[in-house]
View (cartoon, rainbow, N blue to C red):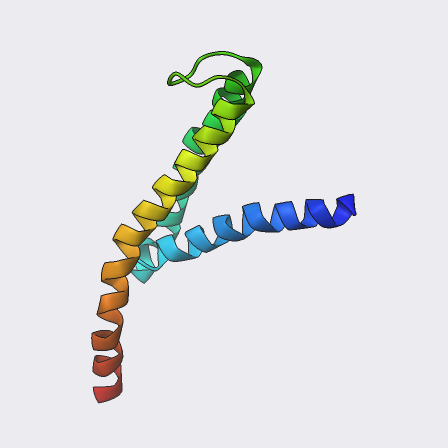
Length: 110
């Protein structure tokens, strides 16, 4: 049972990380894909990984970060991060979805 739980947890963490990489390279030209992915990964690992290892660990140990402490604060920070990510993705995705019909129409007319 614990192996299935670990598989599910890994799938839920690394699946979206892979999809974010695919989404990020969709916004740049073919010549800039590797640079865009490199810049994105730099910030992911420097900022995101550092905050998770240091910030959430210290918060869980009882240090006050942004006024939150303990496991309740840790999960509140994770919830806030998830809500923030959903909001940012909505801001980006809604205009992009509105562009799709015109892109398809141009592709068909060629």
